[in-house]
Amino acid sequence: MWASLEGPHGMVFSLTERIVRIGRKKHGVDVCIPIPVVSALHCTLERKGDGQVWLTDCSTHGVFLHGLRVGIWQSSPLEDGDEIYLSNPCKPHPIVLCFRLHTTNIAPIKDTVDKLDMLIRFVTPEEDKFLALERSRRRHLNLSSPPAPTHHRRNMKPRRQGRHVQPSRS
Image 1: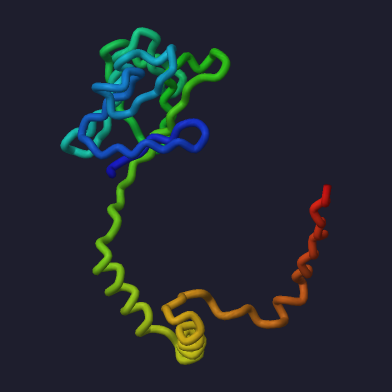
Image 2: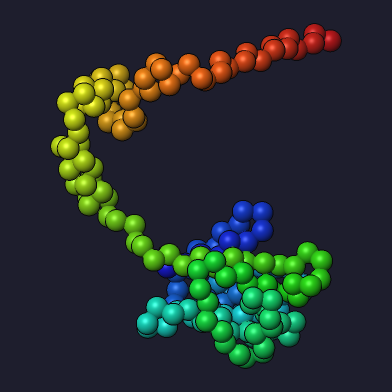
């Protein structure tokens, strides 16, 4: 995944292809948004060889970037955090997608385990005792931090116990 689009209601669309097509129709697009104001093929996102991402407007109703209409068959460069409006931003309830560019790749599991092993080697003796205790309790490695000293706990409020409600027997 090289980028993602964050939509309304927590929807996230992962972008994995070099060219991503966004539109209303179910076939022939990579991101389907089945809303009448969205065109069958509304716009495309294309990642060029230099890493730059371009947005191309293919719709009749328009695509808006930075509040300005891109223009049919016109392209505009995208940056991380840009908001793409698939409908007019001045009208109520615009359709907004936030473009997120992922510049780091997730490390393979073996590399992560090797780095974790190196981290464990540089633990102080006091922390090592705590980690050993956690290992014996849970039978797996837990990298939680040691408990806070008691002088930090004085300002903490105790948790309130909730009321227990018995179900009615009707």
